Structures are given as structure tokens and as C-alpha cells.
Length: 98
Image (cartoon, rainbow, N blue to C red; front, side, top):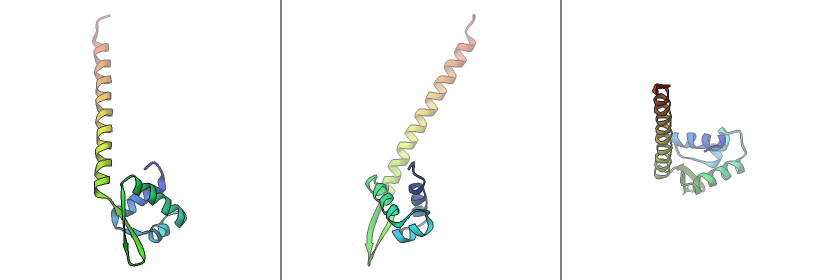
């Protein structure tokens, strides 16, 4: 998700499923580049695809997005706990008599 194009693809797919060509029309990258980004997102479990006629339609994978959110929530909780521990330690040090 650190790549701007991948983030843009995920944002677009959060609105509605679409084909590679539709994604390429709204992104500043080539159609083959969009396909490569979709492959990475699919391998990560964030995107799924299905054939509809002659087109392959991509959509967000709700289970993959939920797993990513859980992971981010875990990181965020750890970061906040670390910050709180550091702040409490600093506060305790400031209150110790000299």
C-alpha cells in the first residue's frame, strides 16, 4: 500500500468494481502497470477478480481488507501504548526528588 498507484487503485475499487481499462483511464500509469499493481494487490489478498464476458472485473476482497485493518489497528495500539509508557516514564522521572 506504500505505492501511490496501488493506493489509488484501492480507493477506486472501494467505490465500485471495475476492469483494468477503467482503472487505467483514471490513473497516470499504463494499462500494463495497472495489471502489475493489481497482481500485487491480489497476491496480498486485498483484491479479487472475476470474469464477466470478455472482461476481468476487479473488486476489493472484504476479508483481505478486514485483515489489513486488524493489522493496522494492532500497530496503532502498540504505538499508542509505547507512547503512553514513555510519557508515564518521563512524568515519573520529572517527579523524582533530586
